[in-house]
Image 1 (tube, rainbow, N blue to C red):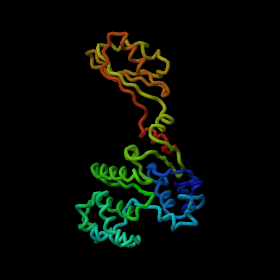
Image 2: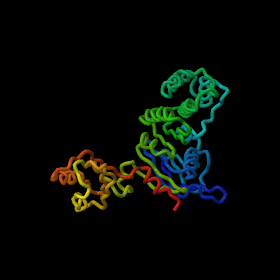
Image 3: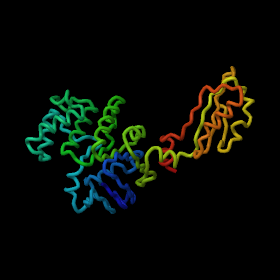
Image 4: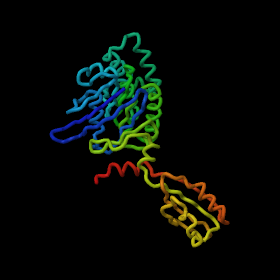
Length: 312
């Protein structure tokens, strides 16, 4: 659906995007992730034809963004970080105006407005001035604007920036609903947002792509060590010995806490390619210890993100 090759953008000698390559499949929801200043917004502006690349190519459904910019834009809906709204207009009047600018057939305007009001949750505020709306509702109006011409591809730049947790959850629900029918590119620096809404993520740092894959793939390939936490009862910490560390794959053992009544929290750091839970359970069954908790976790996406985007 979208192919970017050696995409590069310079601003007066500063390289904002540095020869990146990626593809977006039809029907995919792609999270474009990175810290502030990583090059996310610049990349999206090039994809949508708002700025020209310094070099490289972008093809959308076999259309070249340089040669056929207008045809490409007809396939796209774009919501920038700050939605371009007229605050003195009523929501209905604004969306009606957008529909006519987009040259929708007059007979299709009202059904389209009703459909977008239902999808974006605008029914109760259609006759309110945009300037009186909360930021969450303004983002919804911006989404309706971006979707007015029923584009095949929707590009969203930081759609939940500045929203409260309830508003973020509402916008995520809308994006998930849209993603069932559209190709969506979602730019953000919030990892939980990408996990909640996207099929795949690209992590960009200092203008370069440093990771590409779904959350499970990134954890497996970049996550490093796995931690298994145990809470054991009826245990004297001195009795632990090498019962766990003798297992192939256990790298380190730490006693995190002990409350003096025989309950001890033990953390085992293990190799990521082995699942040692069954063997650990068998080792515990050989004793009179009581297994109260067993929890296995890979490195969080937050940790992976920090590792990939730290300045050094």
